[in-house]
Length: 220
Image 1: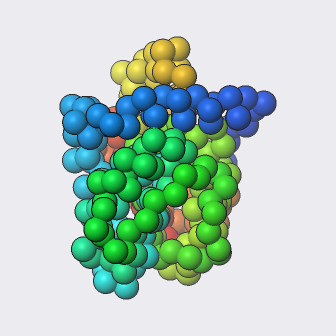
Image 2: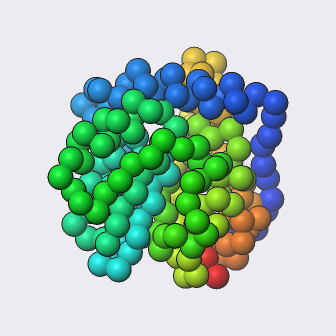
Image 3: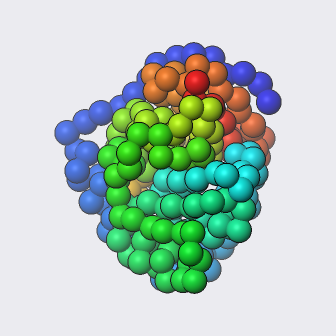
């Protein structure tokens, strides 16, 4: 792992609500068949690495932001004290609850990443896997993740990174064809979000020749 440099970057706009509604519509359509989708199955392998990077234990309370149908929450359930997933798409939340039936320490809520419905310091670990590029308020989302983390809490953000030319092309195409896609970020931009949210240091692991990264940060 190599250190990422401090830099502040952000995005805001008048179309936040429009983008949030597009996210709901887009993922509601995929909910029932999301886990059988080949791309989703590939992303689950990355998600497994992101979960491993959190180094979860029996005392942990995990929050998965942008949980989809709850794969990571279900995987973490046997290890942690509590696992909670939130997603902006109501159909995803409903499907996640159905698939996790019988797991007593698991729950799912419909919520927005920039407005987490939890008290301060409610969790010891936060995961955000392959959903960050959908957020219309990325800086606010990271601040919310920091707010709900207790001292020494761990955050892992896993997503595509706009460092390579091919990823930049994919990013531009997705902005045209996928209404829920906001953008992919460069590594210094992600570092800026973390710094502004109070994370003083972070580490990054590059995957797929730098097309994808796992960024882990610890709250002071």
